[in-house]
Image 1 (cartoon, rainbow, N blue to C red):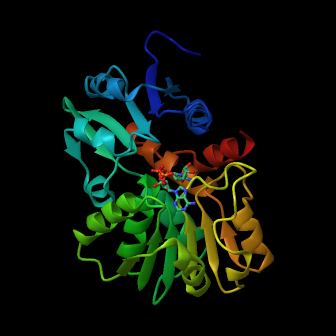
Image 2 (cartoon, rainbow, N blue to C red):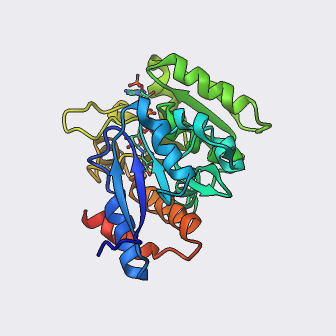
Length: 280
Ligand code: NAP
């Protein structure tokens, strides 16, 4: 039920109609009896600052941020948390003492699902990341923080790849990070212990397979941030070769639960949030 004093949270993105975050967060509010609701907002980029003002002044209690605003929203934030600075983008906003705080929970979601759930041990391991946008920033930061030995990054947009490399270079990571070209993707995919898809490729049935089907082996871990469909072509090919696979659903649930906990200061009902996502 919505009352006069119901708190309103949101997810800001464009497009955002496909987002499963409202289902997950509204289920969590219901489960804990919290008088709040969570709605999707799809502003034009010119209106992003207005929505940020609504959060800063407490009209909206908090928000998630998704494509394409995770980086552009930073300019409206008064206080950037250490985590958001390290990742270089924001996916969680909330007001504090009249200021707008920007945080990022994507990295934590990736870290928990890859290291705890999938059981990947980064020690002396190599990885290839496909895509160098907002999500890749969180993934890269967590892999470098975990002292992965080496990391190859490919993006069809060379400027994005260079921007990501420049960002990582500001930190004293021990991980050797290189940018690779499209003709090197198969070679690096074959030799890497971990392959991570941080592109939207795989969401549509007609999308191509990002790498040749013969690169996979049973010793590899393959992580696709895409979660719709749950079994992408990439994951299906990797699974056929015996690789350990995971889609982005757990990362989505973990990052959502962490945002919820930041906003409400209570333990989030993770299992309920995860179940609602799977059912959505
Ligand atoms: P983004 O900022 O748009 O970055 C994606 C990057 O991939 C872009 O630079 C894009 O280049 C590039 N790209 C597209 N096709 C490619 C290809 N064939 N090879 C190499 N690079 C390619 O998007 P994002 O925010 O990082 O999100 C990426 C995906 O991760 C989306 O599907 C999103 O839904 C998913 N995601 C999942 C979670 C989760 O919790 N599971 C969290 C965040 C994001 P162009 O811009 O030139 O196309």
